[in-house]
Length: 109
Image (cartoon, rainbow, N blue to C red; front, side, top):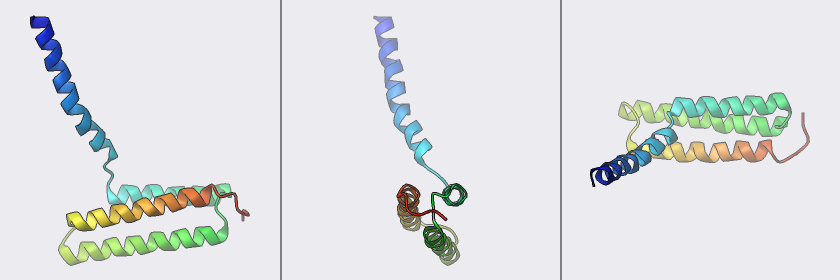
């Protein structure tokens, strides 16, 4: 009986810690996301996966997001939850665009 209750206790601890660990891995800082997206754009240029027009468009969108982030930080002394959510959504869309453009097999440089 004692063995069974210890097993259930262990399972309960594992079940409660698993969602917390999964969500902790998914959270990324804004600066980290920016660095990864910029690195993916640069890698796409070096490999030829992005043509000139695609690269210019993606870098322009990237700069616009960086400007928006700076404006958000200036107006409220930091990022509010809503601003953070907005930036996350926009970075998600930009990341998806980078992926599509790198894999569309258009004419290279």
